Length: 110
Image (cartoon, rainbow, N blue to C red):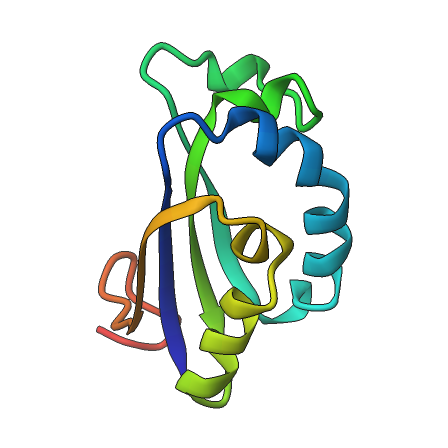
């Protein structure tokens, strides 16, 4: 089942996000087969074409969006709950909801 996980940082979390980047990236490796797509929400004016996923570039990220294919809500919630960014207090707002993909239509659907 698809779930959207949308997370927005608390103001002033750039230093914390940068400090936790490597443990967050390592944590997410186990979930890569479940992530349909995802990425960061960035500050206005960020040149996403030149973005570098490192402790400097990550300072322009202010949240993220993940679409995950997991068996149930509990799995999606656990992915969020156990994330080093979550444990580090980075997020101000979190939305975890079932996701209905409509655009583009999944293969075989009209």
